[in-house]
Length: 434
Ligand SMILES: NC(=O)c1ccc[n+]([C@@H]2O[C@H](COP(=O)([O-])OP(=O)(O)OC[C@H]3O[C@@H](n4cnc5c(N)ncnc54)[C@H](O)[C@@H]3O)[C@@H](O)[C@H]2O)c1
Ligand SMILES: N[C@H](CO)Cc1c[nH]c[nH+]1
Ligand SMILES: [Zn+2]
Image (cartoon, rainbow, N blue to C red):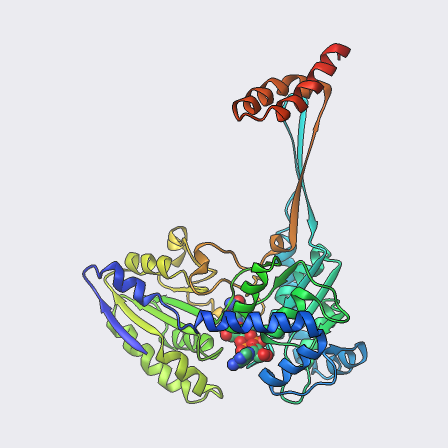
Protein backbone atom coordinates (compact mmCIF):
# COMPACT_ATOMS: atom_id res chain seq x y z
CA UNK A 1 0.00 0.00 0.00
CA UNK A 2 1.10 3.58 -0.53
CA UNK A 3 1.50 5.93 2.43
CA UNK A 4 1.26 9.71 2.13
CA UNK A 5 1.87 12.47 4.64
CA UNK A 6 -0.27 15.35 3.42
CA UNK A 7 0.15 18.20 5.79
CA UNK A 8 0.02 21.94 5.08
CA UNK A 9 -2.67 22.15 2.42
CA UNK A 10 -1.83 19.62 -0.31
CA UNK A 11 -2.94 20.68 -3.80
CA UNK A 12 -6.39 19.76 -5.10
CA UNK A 13 -4.69 18.01 -8.05
CA UNK A 14 -2.97 15.64 -5.65
CA UNK A 15 -6.27 15.01 -3.86
CA UNK A 16 -7.94 14.18 -7.17
CA UNK A 17 -5.19 11.75 -8.12
CA UNK A 18 -5.55 10.05 -4.72
CA UNK A 19 -9.26 9.59 -5.42
CA UNK A 20 -8.65 7.53 -8.59
CA UNK A 21 -9.84 3.91 -8.49
CA UNK A 22 -8.13 1.01 -10.31
CA UNK A 23 -10.20 0.68 -13.51
CA UNK A 24 -10.15 -1.47 -16.65
CA UNK A 25 -10.10 0.16 -20.08
CA UNK A 26 -13.62 1.50 -20.68
CA UNK A 27 -13.55 1.27 -24.49
CA UNK A 28 -12.55 -2.42 -24.45
CA UNK A 29 -15.35 -3.17 -21.98
CA UNK A 30 -17.86 -1.35 -24.17
CA UNK A 31 -16.76 -3.23 -27.29
CA UNK A 32 -17.16 -6.52 -25.44
CA UNK A 33 -20.65 -5.51 -24.28
CA UNK A 34 -21.68 -4.59 -27.83
CA UNK A 35 -20.50 -7.95 -29.17
CA UNK A 36 -22.25 -9.97 -26.45
CA UNK A 37 -25.52 -8.02 -26.60
CA UNK A 38 -25.70 -8.32 -30.40
CA UNK A 39 -24.99 -12.01 -30.34
CA UNK A 40 -27.54 -12.68 -27.57
CA UNK A 41 -30.22 -10.69 -29.41
CA UNK A 42 -29.82 -12.99 -32.43
CA UNK A 43 -28.87 -16.38 -31.05
CA UNK A 44 -30.50 -16.11 -27.59
CA UNK A 45 -29.78 -19.14 -25.34
CA UNK A 46 -27.21 -20.61 -27.74
CA UNK A 47 -25.12 -17.46 -27.37
CA UNK A 48 -25.66 -17.37 -23.59
CA UNK A 49 -24.39 -20.95 -23.26
CA UNK A 50 -21.41 -20.19 -25.50
CA UNK A 51 -20.38 -17.09 -23.51
CA UNK A 52 -20.75 -18.99 -20.25
CA UNK A 53 -18.34 -21.58 -21.61
CA UNK A 54 -15.96 -18.85 -22.79
CA UNK A 55 -15.95 -16.54 -19.74
CA UNK A 56 -16.86 -18.90 -16.90
CA UNK A 57 -15.22 -22.03 -18.27
CA UNK A 58 -18.37 -24.09 -17.65
CA UNK A 59 -20.28 -26.10 -20.24
CA UNK A 60 -23.96 -26.04 -19.28
CA UNK A 61 -26.79 -27.89 -21.01
CA UNK A 62 -29.33 -25.25 -19.90
CA UNK A 63 -29.20 -21.77 -18.42
CA UNK A 64 -32.37 -22.35 -16.36
CA UNK A 65 -32.36 -23.52 -12.75
CA UNK A 66 -35.50 -25.61 -12.32
CA UNK A 67 -37.66 -25.79 -9.19
CA UNK A 68 -36.42 -29.27 -8.26
CA UNK A 69 -32.76 -28.28 -8.42
CA UNK A 70 -33.52 -25.14 -6.40
CA UNK A 71 -35.20 -27.16 -3.65
CA UNK A 72 -32.51 -29.84 -3.62
CA UNK A 73 -29.72 -27.23 -3.31
CA UNK A 74 -31.56 -25.15 -0.71
CA UNK A 75 -32.10 -28.22 1.45
CA UNK A 76 -28.34 -28.66 1.80
CA UNK A 77 -27.57 -25.65 4.02
CA UNK A 78 -26.90 -26.28 7.68
CA UNK A 79 -29.12 -25.11 10.51
CA UNK A 80 -26.90 -22.32 11.96
CA UNK A 81 -26.59 -20.71 8.53
CA UNK A 82 -30.34 -21.02 7.98
CA UNK A 83 -31.00 -19.29 11.32
CA UNK A 84 -28.50 -16.51 10.50
CA UNK A 85 -30.07 -15.92 7.06
CA UNK A 86 -33.57 -15.88 8.58
CA UNK A 87 -32.54 -13.22 11.11
CA UNK A 88 -30.79 -11.11 8.43
CA UNK A 89 -33.97 -11.44 6.34
CA UNK A 90 -36.00 -10.08 9.27
CA UNK A 91 -33.68 -7.11 9.91
CA UNK A 92 -33.37 -6.13 6.24
CA UNK A 93 -37.15 -6.47 5.81
CA UNK A 94 -37.86 -4.24 8.81
CA UNK A 95 -35.55 -1.48 7.61
CA UNK A 96 -36.94 -1.57 4.07
CA UNK A 97 -40.61 -1.76 5.10
CA UNK A 98 -40.01 1.39 7.14
CA UNK A 99 -38.92 3.13 3.91
CA UNK A 100 -42.27 2.65 2.11
CA UNK A 101 -43.31 6.15 1.09
CA UNK A 102 -46.66 7.76 1.88
CA UNK A 103 -49.00 8.76 -0.92
CA UNK A 104 -49.36 12.56 -1.24
CA UNK A 105 -52.82 14.16 -1.55
CA UNK A 106 -53.21 17.93 -1.66
CA UNK A 107 -55.58 20.70 -2.76
CA UNK A 108 -52.95 23.07 -4.20
CA UNK A 109 -55.44 25.77 -5.27
CA UNK A 110 -59.20 26.04 -4.72
CA UNK A 111 -60.77 23.09 -6.59
CA UNK A 112 -57.41 21.71 -7.81
CA UNK A 113 -56.59 18.31 -6.29
CA UNK A 114 -53.13 16.74 -6.85
CA UNK A 115 -52.10 13.28 -5.70
CA UNK A 116 -48.98 11.18 -6.02
CA UNK A 117 -49.19 7.41 -5.76
CA UNK A 118 -46.56 4.73 -6.25
CA UNK A 119 -46.55 1.46 -8.13
CA UNK A 120 -44.03 -1.38 -8.06
CA UNK A 121 -41.97 -1.76 -11.24
CA UNK A 122 -43.56 -4.81 -12.85
CA UNK A 123 -40.53 -6.65 -14.26
CA UNK A 124 -37.15 -6.48 -12.55
CA UNK A 125 -33.85 -8.30 -13.06
CA UNK A 126 -31.54 -8.99 -10.11
CA UNK A 127 -27.83 -9.69 -10.60
CA UNK A 128 -26.13 -11.62 -7.80
CA UNK A 129 -22.31 -11.70 -8.01
CA UNK A 130 -20.70 -15.12 -7.91
CA UNK A 131 -17.36 -14.92 -9.68
CA UNK A 132 -15.10 -15.12 -6.67
CA UNK A 133 -17.71 -15.76 -3.93
CA UNK A 134 -21.44 -16.60 -4.11
CA UNK A 135 -22.90 -13.49 -2.49
CA UNK A 136 -26.20 -14.84 -1.17
CA UNK A 137 -26.30 -11.78 1.11
CA UNK A 138 -26.69 -9.66 -2.05
CA UNK A 139 -29.70 -11.76 -2.99
CA UNK A 140 -31.36 -10.70 0.28
CA UNK A 141 -30.47 -7.05 -0.39
CA UNK A 142 -32.19 -7.07 -3.79
CA UNK A 143 -34.96 -9.63 -3.50
CA UNK A 144 -36.36 -8.41 -0.16
CA UNK A 145 -37.29 -4.92 -1.42
CA UNK A 146 -38.69 -6.45 -4.64
CA UNK A 147 -40.79 -8.81 -2.50
CA UNK A 148 -41.96 -6.03 -0.16
CA UNK A 149 -43.24 -3.77 -2.94
CA UNK A 150 -44.66 -6.71 -4.93
CA UNK A 151 -42.80 -6.65 -8.27
CA UNK A 152 -44.84 -9.06 -10.44
CA UNK A 153 -41.94 -10.62 -12.31
CA UNK A 154 -38.47 -11.10 -10.88
CA UNK A 155 -35.70 -12.72 -12.93
CA UNK A 156 -32.47 -13.48 -11.10
CA UNK A 157 -29.06 -14.15 -12.65
CA UNK A 158 -26.01 -15.54 -10.92
CA UNK A 159 -22.96 -17.36 -12.27
CA UNK A 160 -22.50 -21.06 -11.46
CA UNK A 161 -19.37 -22.43 -9.81
CA UNK A 162 -16.81 -24.52 -11.69
CA UNK A 163 -19.00 -27.64 -11.26
CA UNK A 164 -21.94 -25.87 -12.86
CA UNK A 165 -23.83 -25.56 -9.55
CA UNK A 166 -25.49 -22.69 -7.71
CA UNK A 167 -24.57 -22.29 -4.06
CA UNK A 168 -26.92 -23.88 -1.49
CA UNK A 169 -27.28 -20.74 0.66
CA UNK A 170 -28.11 -18.70 -2.41
CA UNK A 171 -30.87 -21.17 -3.30
CA UNK A 172 -32.17 -21.05 0.28
CA UNK A 173 -32.24 -17.23 0.24
CA UNK A 174 -33.99 -17.30 -3.17
CA UNK A 175 -36.71 -19.57 -1.79
CA UNK A 176 -37.13 -17.36 1.27
CA UNK A 177 -37.68 -14.34 -0.99
CA UNK A 178 -40.08 -16.20 -3.31
CA UNK A 179 -37.82 -16.08 -6.38
CA UNK A 180 -39.01 -18.44 -9.10
CA UNK A 181 -36.95 -17.56 -12.19
CA UNK A 182 -33.21 -18.15 -11.86
CA UNK A 183 -30.76 -18.06 -14.75
CA UNK A 184 -27.31 -19.62 -14.37
CA UNK A 185 -25.54 -16.66 -15.91
CA UNK A 186 -22.85 -14.22 -14.84
CA UNK A 187 -21.05 -11.19 -16.27
CA UNK A 188 -21.99 -9.37 -19.47
CA UNK A 189 -24.06 -12.28 -20.81
CA UNK A 190 -26.27 -12.19 -17.69
CA UNK A 191 -27.03 -8.50 -18.15
CA UNK A 192 -27.70 -9.07 -21.88
CA UNK A 193 -30.14 -11.86 -20.95
CA UNK A 194 -31.98 -9.64 -18.45
CA UNK A 195 -32.27 -6.68 -20.79
CA UNK A 196 -33.15 -8.58 -23.97
CA UNK A 197 -34.89 -11.65 -22.59
CA UNK A 198 -34.09 -15.31 -23.21
CA UNK A 199 -36.05 -18.11 -24.85
CA UNK A 200 -38.10 -18.48 -21.64
CA UNK A 201 -37.89 -15.09 -19.89
CA UNK A 202 -39.04 -11.69 -21.09
CA UNK A 203 -36.91 -8.52 -21.00
CA UNK A 204 -37.03 -6.72 -17.66
CA UNK A 205 -37.72 -3.00 -17.19
CA UNK A 206 -34.97 -2.38 -14.63
CA UNK A 207 -31.76 -4.20 -13.68
CA UNK A 208 -30.45 -4.21 -10.11
CA UNK A 209 -27.28 -5.48 -8.50
CA UNK A 210 -23.58 -5.07 -8.00
CA UNK A 211 -20.73 -6.84 -9.74
CA UNK A 212 -17.26 -6.60 -11.15
CA UNK A 213 -16.27 -4.13 -13.85
CA UNK A 214 -17.71 -6.36 -16.60
CA UNK A 215 -21.09 -6.31 -14.88
CA UNK A 216 -21.00 -2.54 -14.27
CA UNK A 217 -20.07 -1.87 -17.92
CA UNK A 218 -22.83 -4.21 -19.14
CA UNK A 219 -25.43 -2.47 -16.97
CA UNK A 220 -24.32 0.90 -18.36
CA UNK A 221 -24.57 -0.55 -21.88
CA UNK A 222 -28.07 -1.88 -21.12
CA UNK A 223 -29.03 1.58 -19.92
CA UNK A 224 -27.92 3.06 -23.24
CA UNK A 225 -30.25 0.53 -24.90
CA UNK A 226 -33.20 1.83 -22.87
CA UNK A 227 -33.32 -0.44 -19.82
CA UNK A 228 -33.24 1.31 -16.44
CA UNK A 229 -30.55 0.42 -13.91
CA UNK A 230 -30.28 0.95 -10.19
CA UNK A 231 -26.77 2.49 -9.85
CA UNK A 232 -23.13 1.87 -10.74
CA UNK A 233 -22.15 -0.60 -7.96
CA UNK A 234 -18.72 -1.98 -8.79
CA UNK A 235 -15.65 -3.24 -6.91
CA UNK A 236 -16.00 -2.76 -3.16
CA UNK A 237 -14.25 0.02 -1.30
CA UNK A 238 -13.95 1.37 2.22
CA UNK A 239 -12.51 4.56 3.66
CA UNK A 240 -11.70 4.59 7.37
CA UNK A 241 -11.06 7.75 9.39
CA UNK A 242 -9.26 6.96 12.64
CA UNK A 243 -8.02 9.03 15.56
CA UNK A 244 -6.22 8.10 18.77
CA UNK A 245 -9.38 6.53 20.20
CA UNK A 246 -9.47 3.90 17.43
CA UNK A 247 -8.57 0.25 17.94
CA UNK A 248 -5.85 -0.69 15.37
CA UNK A 249 -6.95 -4.36 15.39
CA UNK A 250 -10.51 -3.40 14.42
CA UNK A 251 -9.34 -1.03 11.69
CA UNK A 252 -6.97 -3.56 10.15
CA UNK A 253 -9.81 -6.10 9.99
CA UNK A 254 -12.18 -3.55 8.41
CA UNK A 255 -9.62 -2.73 5.71
CA UNK A 256 -8.96 -6.42 5.01
CA UNK A 257 -12.68 -7.19 4.84
CA UNK A 258 -13.17 -5.02 1.78
CA UNK A 259 -9.78 -5.83 0.25
CA UNK A 260 -10.75 -9.51 0.19
CA UNK A 261 -13.57 -8.85 -2.28
CA UNK A 262 -11.24 -8.62 -5.24
CA UNK A 263 -7.93 -7.36 -6.58
CA UNK A 264 -9.65 -4.19 -7.83
CA UNK A 265 -11.12 -3.30 -4.43
CA UNK A 266 -9.67 -0.18 -2.83
CA UNK A 267 -9.24 0.56 0.86
CA UNK A 268 -8.22 3.94 2.25
CA UNK A 269 -7.12 4.91 5.75
CA UNK A 270 -7.04 8.55 6.89
CA UNK A 271 -5.37 9.44 10.19
CA UNK A 272 -4.10 12.52 11.97
CA UNK A 273 -1.39 10.68 13.86
CA UNK A 274 1.42 8.54 12.42
CA UNK A 275 1.42 6.27 15.49
CA UNK A 276 -2.02 4.85 14.80
CA UNK A 277 -1.05 4.30 11.17
CA UNK A 278 1.99 2.28 12.18
CA UNK A 279 -0.04 0.21 14.62
CA UNK A 280 -2.65 -0.55 11.94
CA UNK A 281 0.11 -1.66 9.55
CA UNK A 282 1.48 -4.09 12.12
CA UNK A 283 -2.01 -5.52 12.72
CA UNK A 284 -2.57 -5.83 8.97
CA UNK A 285 0.53 -7.99 8.61
CA UNK A 286 -0.53 -10.15 11.55
CA UNK A 287 -4.12 -10.65 10.40
CA UNK A 288 -3.27 -11.10 6.73
CA UNK A 289 -1.35 -14.32 7.33
CA UNK A 290 -4.42 -16.20 8.54
CA UNK A 291 -6.66 -15.19 5.62
CA UNK A 292 -7.47 -17.77 2.93
CA UNK A 293 -7.78 -15.04 0.29
CA UNK A 294 -4.50 -13.30 1.17
CA UNK A 295 -3.27 -13.20 -2.42
CA UNK A 296 -6.32 -11.23 -3.52
CA UNK A 297 -5.98 -9.01 -0.44
CA UNK A 298 -2.33 -8.24 -1.19
CA UNK A 299 -3.23 -7.12 -4.71
CA UNK A 300 -5.98 -4.87 -3.40
CA UNK A 301 -3.70 -3.44 -0.71
CA UNK A 302 -1.04 -2.68 -3.30
CA UNK A 303 -3.34 -0.04 -4.83
CA UNK A 304 -4.72 1.32 -1.60
CA UNK A 305 -3.88 4.54 0.23
CA UNK A 306 -2.94 5.40 3.78
CA UNK A 307 -2.84 9.15 4.35
CA UNK A 308 -1.85 11.38 7.27
CA UNK A 309 -3.69 14.70 7.37
CA UNK A 310 -3.39 17.72 9.67
CA UNK A 311 -6.75 17.31 11.39
CA UNK A 312 -10.07 15.47 11.37
CA UNK A 313 -11.90 18.22 9.47
CA UNK A 314 -9.47 17.77 6.56
CA UNK A 315 -10.02 13.99 6.72
CA UNK A 316 -13.78 14.56 6.38
CA UNK A 317 -13.23 17.02 3.50
CA UNK A 318 -11.08 14.46 1.67
CA UNK A 319 -13.65 11.74 2.29
CA UNK A 320 -16.38 13.93 0.77
CA UNK A 321 -14.25 14.38 -2.36
CA UNK A 322 -13.41 10.64 -2.51
CA UNK A 323 -17.11 9.73 -1.94
CA UNK A 324 -16.50 6.20 -0.63
CA UNK A 325 -18.93 3.31 -0.90
CA UNK A 326 -18.40 2.67 2.83
CA UNK A 327 -17.15 5.17 5.36
CA UNK A 328 -16.07 4.07 8.84
CA UNK A 329 -15.71 6.75 11.50
CA UNK A 330 -13.44 5.29 14.18
CA UNK A 331 -13.14 8.58 15.98
CA UNK A 332 -14.03 10.05 19.34
CA UNK A 333 -17.52 11.64 19.39
CA UNK A 334 -18.14 10.28 15.89
CA UNK A 335 -21.81 11.33 16.04
CA UNK A 336 -20.83 14.98 16.09
CA UNK A 337 -19.28 14.64 12.59
CA UNK A 338 -22.29 13.06 10.88
CA UNK A 339 -23.79 16.32 9.62
CA UNK A 340 -20.51 17.04 7.77
CA UNK A 341 -20.74 13.80 5.77
CA UNK A 342 -21.91 14.82 2.30
CA UNK A 343 -20.85 11.98 -0.02
CA UNK A 344 -20.83 8.32 1.09
CA UNK A 345 -22.83 5.17 0.31
CA UNK A 346 -23.22 3.97 3.90
CA UNK A 347 -21.58 5.16 7.10
CA UNK A 348 -20.42 3.09 10.10
CA UNK A 349 -20.34 5.17 13.21
CA UNK A 350 -17.97 4.58 16.14
CA UNK A 351 -15.65 1.76 17.12
CA UNK A 352 -18.29 -0.96 17.41
CA UNK A 353 -19.75 -0.66 13.91
CA UNK A 354 -17.87 -2.96 11.52
CA UNK A 355 -18.65 -2.61 7.83
CA UNK A 356 -19.42 -6.34 7.70
CA UNK A 357 -22.49 -5.77 9.92
CA UNK A 358 -23.97 -3.72 7.07
CA UNK A 359 -22.86 -6.31 4.51
CA UNK A 360 -24.95 -8.99 6.16
CA UNK A 361 -27.39 -8.23 8.86
CA UNK A 362 -27.80 -4.74 10.35
CA UNK A 363 -30.70 -4.07 7.98
CA UNK A 364 -29.25 -1.39 5.67
CA UNK A 365 -28.75 -2.28 2.01
CA UNK A 366 -25.21 -3.23 0.97
CA UNK A 367 -25.71 -2.51 -2.75
CA UNK A 368 -23.98 0.85 -2.85
CA UNK A 369 -22.39 3.31 -5.29
CA UNK A 370 -18.65 2.94 -5.91
CA UNK A 371 -16.00 4.82 -7.90
CA UNK A 372 -17.12 8.22 -6.56
CA UNK A 373 -20.75 7.78 -7.63
CA UNK A 374 -21.84 8.36 -4.01
CA UNK A 375 -21.70 12.03 -5.02
CA UNK A 376 -24.86 11.57 -7.07
CA UNK A 377 -26.38 8.12 -6.41
CA UNK A 378 -27.99 6.46 -3.39
CA UNK A 379 -27.59 2.80 -2.54
CA UNK A 380 -30.45 0.43 -3.32
CA UNK A 381 -33.56 1.21 -1.28
CA UNK A 382 -37.32 0.71 -1.50
CA UNK A 383 -37.78 3.74 -3.76
CA UNK A 384 -35.61 2.14 -6.45
CA UNK A 385 -38.28 -0.55 -6.97
CA UNK A 386 -41.12 1.96 -7.24
CA UNK A 387 -42.36 4.45 -9.78
CA UNK A 388 -44.45 7.40 -8.78
CA UNK A 389 -47.47 8.54 -10.74
CA UNK A 390 -49.11 11.90 -10.23
CA UNK A 391 -52.83 12.54 -10.70
CA UNK A 392 -54.75 15.80 -10.85
CA UNK A 393 -58.47 16.44 -10.75
CA UNK A 394 -59.93 19.91 -11.29
CA UNK A 395 -63.49 20.67 -10.27
CA UNK A 396 -65.64 23.28 -12.08
CA UNK A 397 -64.50 25.79 -9.48
CA UNK A 398 -60.90 24.64 -9.96
CA UNK A 399 -60.82 25.19 -13.75
CA UNK A 400 -62.56 28.54 -13.44
CA UNK A 401 -59.99 29.73 -10.91
CA UNK A 402 -56.80 28.34 -12.41
CA UNK A 403 -57.51 28.81 -16.12
CA UNK A 404 -56.53 32.53 -16.26
CA UNK A 405 -53.07 31.54 -14.93
CA UNK A 406 -52.70 28.70 -17.44
CA UNK A 407 -53.96 30.83 -20.35
CA UNK A 408 -51.60 33.70 -19.54
CA UNK A 409 -48.55 31.42 -19.24
CA UNK A 410 -49.42 29.38 -22.35
CA UNK A 411 -49.82 32.52 -24.47
CA UNK A 412 -46.54 33.89 -23.18
CA UNK A 413 -44.84 30.69 -24.40
CA UNK A 414 -46.59 31.10 -27.75
CA UNK A 415 -48.55 27.85 -27.27
CA UNK A 416 -52.11 28.84 -28.21
CA UNK A 417 -53.53 25.30 -28.22
CA UNK A 418 -52.49 24.91 -24.60
CA UNK A 419 -54.36 28.08 -23.73
CA UNK A 420 -57.37 26.96 -25.78
CA UNK A 421 -57.68 23.59 -23.95
CA UNK A 422 -58.03 25.45 -20.68
CA UNK A 423 -60.09 28.41 -21.92
CA UNK A 424 -62.76 26.22 -23.56
CA UNK A 425 -63.42 24.46 -20.26
CA UNK A 426 -63.42 27.73 -18.30
CA UNK A 427 -65.95 29.28 -20.69
CA UNK A 428 -68.09 26.11 -20.61
CA UNK A 429 -68.24 26.27 -16.81
CA UNK A 430 -68.91 30.01 -16.79
CA UNK A 431 -71.73 29.67 -19.37
CA UNK A 432 -73.33 26.88 -17.35
CA UNK A 433 -73.09 29.15 -14.33
CA UNK A 434 -71.41 26.46 -12.19
N1 LIG B 1 -20.82 -2.03 -4.76
C1 LIG B 1 -21.55 -2.97 -4.21
O1 LIG B 1 -22.62 -2.71 -3.70
C2 LIG B 1 -21.05 -4.39 -4.19
C3 LIG B 1 -21.75 -5.38 -3.49
C4 LIG B 1 -21.30 -6.69 -3.55
C5 LIG B 1 -20.19 -7.00 -4.31
N2 LIG B 1 -19.53 -6.01 -4.97
C6 LIG B 1 -18.40 -6.28 -5.86
O2 LIG B 1 -18.88 -7.18 -6.86
C7 LIG B 1 -17.77 -7.81 -7.45
C8 LIG B 1 -18.06 -9.27 -7.69
O3 LIG B 1 -17.13 -9.67 -8.64
P1 LIG B 1 -16.90 -11.17 -9.02
O4 LIG B 1 -15.91 -11.19 -10.13
O5 LIG B 1 -16.62 -11.95 -7.82
O6 LIG B 1 -18.32 -11.69 -9.54
P2 LIG B 1 -19.31 -11.18 -10.67
O7 LIG B 1 -20.49 -12.10 -10.58
O8 LIG B 1 -19.56 -9.74 -10.59
O9 LIG B 1 -18.57 -11.44 -12.05
C9 LIG B 1 -18.30 -12.73 -12.49
C10 LIG B 1 -18.50 -12.79 -13.98
O10 LIG B 1 -17.58 -11.92 -14.64
C11 LIG B 1 -17.37 -12.41 -15.94
N3 LIG B 1 -15.94 -12.25 -16.27
C12 LIG B 1 -14.88 -12.44 -15.47
N4 LIG B 1 -13.72 -12.24 -16.16
C13 LIG B 1 -14.09 -11.93 -17.43
C14 LIG B 1 -13.36 -11.61 -18.62
N5 LIG B 1 -12.03 -11.58 -18.63
N6 LIG B 1 -14.06 -11.33 -19.73
C15 LIG B 1 -15.42 -11.33 -19.73
N7 LIG B 1 -16.15 -11.64 -18.64
C16 LIG B 1 -15.50 -11.93 -17.52
C17 LIG B 1 -17.74 -13.86 -15.97
O11 LIG B 1 -18.76 -14.08 -16.87
C18 LIG B 1 -18.22 -14.15 -14.54
O12 LIG B 1 -19.42 -14.91 -14.51
C19 LIG B 1 -16.59 -7.55 -6.53
O13 LIG B 1 -15.76 -6.58 -7.14
C20 LIG B 1 -17.23 -7.00 -5.28
O14 LIG B 1 -16.38 -6.13 -4.62
C21 LIG B 1 -19.95 -4.73 -4.93
N1 LIG C 1 -19.09 -5.37 0.89
C1 LIG C 1 -19.89 -5.72 -0.25
C2 LIG C 1 -20.39 -4.42 -0.88
O1 LIG C 1 -19.33 -3.67 -1.35
C3 LIG C 1 -21.08 -6.59 0.06
C4 LIG C 1 -20.78 -7.93 0.63
C5 LIG C 1 -21.44 -9.09 0.42
N2 LIG C 1 -20.87 -10.07 1.16
C6 LIG C 1 -19.89 -9.51 1.82
N3 LIG C 1 -19.81 -8.24 1.49
ZN1 LIG D 1 -18.14 -6.99 1.91
